[in-house]
Image (cartoon, rainbow, N blue to C red; front, side, top):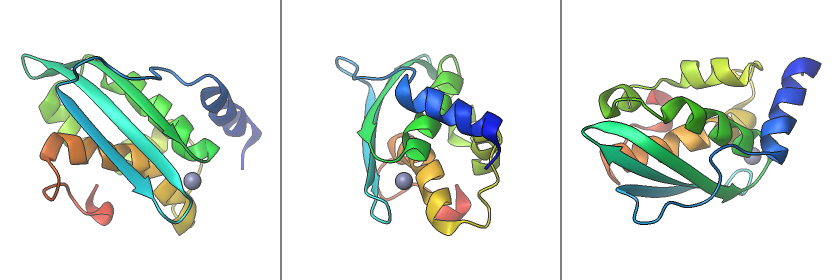
Length: 132
Ligand code: ZN
């Protein structure tokens, strides 16, 4: 793993952005990654179809928690329609380390996105992991 990106991940892991819970969130979702034991909960505030605030809470490995921290930074001010189309490539770009060939780690990295989609689309209507 590239040292620069390793540093970035550890920085987000130690000092996560938008960490905690929202009071009375408009959308709340929680997902877990049984392969690694990671868990992410996302609370979203939606006003006029735009995400105006977001918090996440969770536990697990550095990649899962850092990617949630990075994703939440992107989401604030984003229209819901854009967030629904937020691609895994876009999130992996933010994380900056090549995980395409690491099936376990990629589940860690994409857990926050999976949680977001579950919240926005509703349980049972979110895309499969492969189509995030
Ligand atoms: Zn993990």
